[in-house]
Amino acid sequence: MKRRPFLAAAASTGALTCLKPAELFAAEKLALSKGDVILFQGDSITDAGREKKSPVANAGLGRGYPKFIAESLRQDHPDLDLQIQNRGISGNKVPDLDRRWQADCIDLQPKILSILIGVNDIWHKLNGKYEGTSESYKAGFAALLERTRTALPQTTFVICEPFVLMSGTVKENQDKWFPEFDVRRTYAKEVAMDAGAIWVPFQTMFDDSVASGTEPQKLAGDGVHPTQLGHQLMAKTWREVVGI
Image (tube, rainbow, N blue to C red; front, side, top):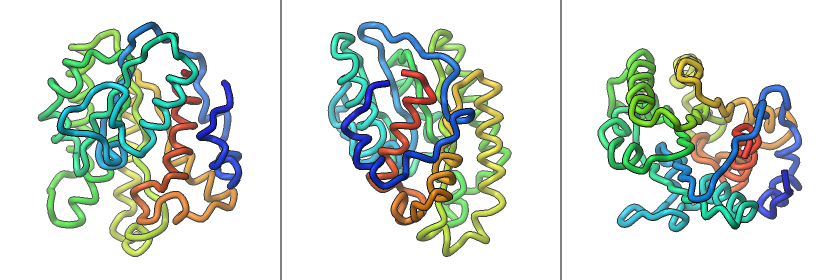
């Protein structure tokens, strides 16, 4: 893969030097074609301030990992006119995705569908705003992917691992977050494997970065929402794992 400008700042911190190749690299590259739609879905981590009133491809993608991925993909493939969409919405949980899925996913006919969802499914529960369980998260996520596969049989699914870092609100309330959050991460991977999806292990990625010496708050100040460094690391890892 070509070296991209957005990787330089993150690499200089050492945050990008600790990945485990056996876990974080795709077995084979995906072939891209002219006009392919690549869709990012999720909550505030994906949303990252993106344009919501009149969303269009390749514009208003926010300040997070979808933006960095889009910039590098379009730089590497200027002739393909890739149509990159960000439809993440802050606060979303699996049921929220389900309610808006026809317009915000199926109607867009993506070649690649990337989903990062799960942190609100537990965070809102901890805050008393939601009653969903780990089991309902798994069942709802699996049903959403089954519905999507029926409608979009040729779409490549990319499921991103929900993650938290030991900083901010997560560190302050870790006895409430765990072990339930680990159960939900396990369920997300099981759902991904059952759906034949590419699995992007963001928690492993962040854990490895911290183990190599990067302070957790430099990657996600509140333990949930990545800093720009965190988003850059996510973008790099996503491309390496997905193989485009």
